[in-house]
Image (spheres, rainbow, N blue to C red):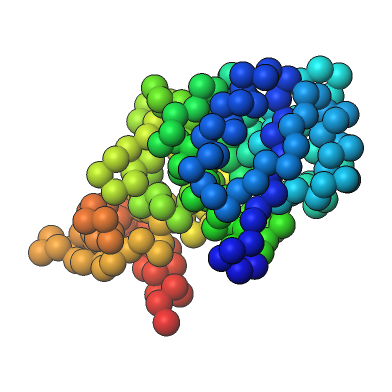
Length: 245
């Protein structure tokens, strides 16, 4: 695709104001052209066949067939890049199980929409269909709405009572999930337990330093320093060495 090509957008929402809102948010992005709007899931299925859009802004709850019904009937493999729209955040995990690229809670701010457009463009420029080489992410809820954290951006994770605290640089996000449950989900994606209360992303380890007392410290590219327990020392060291060229 050249820099002058246009990306075709389909907007699906049963509320006219919501469809108009997406159009207005898209207006500054000249590479996107809205080819159609749909009010329900059946219209979406017909438009997907007729118009072959590159991007679909898809409401979760619509008459007759909702957003998840559309994906189930058409299958993930035959969908364009999907960004879910909804007034509620409780569908976020289900949306990412359906391999949506992003999940926007209405009303959507310009800053949040800009972050979504950046992710969409990255996917489209890479020429990847929806779900191809899917980036592993974690969905967290904040006071400002739902945020998608790619695993590659998370430096380390620590236990916080019944929550897990995810550190991205100097910022942290709380996830209502135990460290053990989270470890079972992400250990295969480059994370290793540093001690009983913390995990680190292996690719984010800048150095393993030994203190004068013989303790091992993982120094991360973010600047954070995470102690490594004696029990975990061999596993952490092996993981870091395996990563190194």
